[in-house]
Amino acid sequence: MNESCGTSPIVGFRFTLSPMTDDFVGTIKGALKGTNMTGVWRHTDDVSTVIRGRAEHVFDVARTVLSLASEEGRHVSMSGTFSVGCPGDSAGDEALQSPPQPLNAISREQYVSSQFALYPMGAKNYMDLIYDEIEQAKQAGVYNDSMHYASGVHGNLDDVFSYYEAAFNRTREKNRHVVMTVTFSVNSPSHGGRHA
Image 1 (cartoon, rainbow, N blue to C red):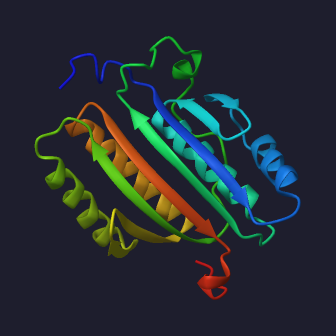
Image 2 (cartoon, rainbow, N blue to C red):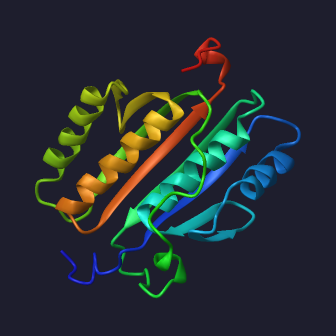
Image 3 (tube, one colour):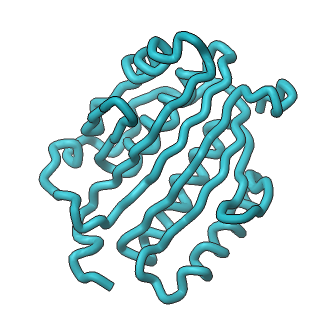
């Protein structure tokens, strides 16, 4: 494994938010503006948004953006990649100095369906680490289904994000460079009007 991996404590999440509405620009901008991002560094371009900082702030901000974008019943999806230990990250960001407490409120009760893939980079026992987290999802009551190239997780928005944050941090404790891809779907017609 590359010894320069894992030297930075910065967690990053690059995501694309896709509201299924004519006013997708207003929905995206409104969700970003309504989220307290004091604890993260953020940059938005014409394709995606990246947030970087302490893990607890990154997951808190990601959860809140998705919650706000979908709060009026709009069908919204969010796809992105969480990463830690990338040799390209710098440990000098001011966001790392933020207090550890998340800054956004708990989300309303909202059902979310999602799929994730976990990549413990360079780990010889990578499949064991992945299977461990699938078992953790089952124990947490959020496991949905296994499928090609991903595993399904669903339930209340806060419970789903709590699982992902815990899974990411547990894997990070065992392997320095971790990547996790996630796709979320909220208010989809295929959910049959389900709410958590």
